[in-house]
Amino acid sequence: MLKQNLSHKMLQKLSPQQIQLMKLLQIPTATLDQRIKEELEANPALEEGEETDEIQQLIDSSETSQAESTPEKEEEVTREEEFELDDYLTEYIEDDPSSYKLKVNNYSADEEDKTIPIAVENTFHEYLEQQLGMLKLLDEREFKIAQQVIGSIDDDGYLRREPSAIIDDLMFAQNIVAREEEVKALLSKVQRFDPPGIGARDLQECLLLQLRTKYEALEGKSISTEKTITLLALRIIEEYFNEFSKKHYQKLQRYLNISELELKDAIDEILKLNPKPASGYGSGRRTTHYIVPDFIIVNREGELDLTLNSRNAPDLRINEQYKDMLKSYKVGRVVSKPSRQQKEAVMFIKQKIDSAKWFIDAIRQRQQTMYKTMYSIMQYQYDFFLTGDQKRLRPMILKDIADITGLDISTVSRVANSKFVQTEFGTKRLKDFFSESLQTNSGEEVSTLEVKKILTDIISEENKKKPFSDEKLKNILREKGYNIARRTVAKYREQLNVPVARLRKEL
Image (cartoon, rainbow, N blue to C red; front, side, top):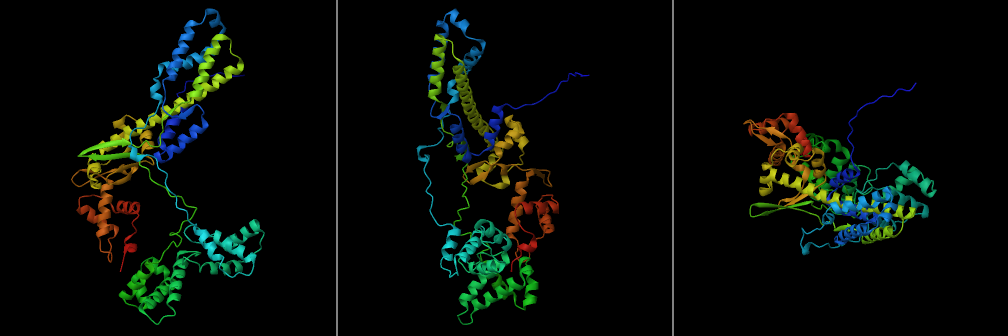
């Protein structure tokens, strides 16, 4: 027996237009141009250029033709057809056609789009293969094994794959059966390529390869201070790498039976080495990312002026041909009853023009929302944008800006995500202006960014021979009036990518 129940539910659903706007809000200006190009390719009813008044003329003519049509002809038009066209034209009548153009006027002629020249250079792996051609190898088989080894070297210059994995690749890709000894022998030859340190399997081997290359260059010379220092550095990395990496300098002096000055010279020699030997070469696998500011703040004699960088948002309009199709359909409908194919065609036109309108609306709303949000942030952090002093940053969370703008917190978060603002003090990440508050001993609320700035200043001025521990840093901050726990100091230090006191120690 079936039972029927009646229930009430409250559901929140987002329209396609709202979803589109949220997605557009998240992307930065640097990628907005690509998103617009994708929409232009997907929707033939959307095109670049200023909107004209033709659409309004079309609407006017459609109203006139409706007035001139006879009652008999009107009866031939079904309700479905009226919905298809009349409601559609009504949308145009109610909406302001000028709102569907997106004109960008906030940059000067000097800022016109220019093609960025791209330097043509050999990639890092091509550079290694050029050197491979100068090796005396037994046959083509050895050459292909060496090529596989070079291809397995990553963009930092390290070989982080096991010989067994390289052997498997050779088997499946080139039908070559190789032995581990062969791979290691060819790797040893590749490790003598330029730059020194290439093909190392870890940091220790990378430093050893560079030091050995330098020592071999000095080997033919008589005993010199440079040769002695290089030999000592070699011994430290080869025998006491763990103590070196943990900066146990007193242990190193005791194990090696050397003075502090000798140890300092050897450490300085090691610090000159490149831990990423391929870093100075073009890779071909890497992509250079340019930061394009989404906002620009200019200080005009003490008054801040905010502009939205909209260079990647071209003028958009409804395609002229689609307007003509709509006009032709209107004229033809008065003369005779439209066929099924004509109805399907006009529905397709309606969908594409609607989609174009929604996209133009979304772009316009995106700009308005971004400007509104950034303007509120600028007003909230006015002192910072005037002076550039991080200590002037006020505690600010997403809710503060949401309350000022009347926007939802999630909307503010989307605006702040991956966006940058250009100021006279440099280009800043928008989300870096948001921070929690911290109460001082006097009861005043300050931003955690201010505490981090002071912590950075304290660490930069400390005696590197005896760096401050987290406990000592806590005490110094408390003396300055910041009531903060030791674990909080450790958390801020880690966020600033500052190592512990032992690893900040220098000779």
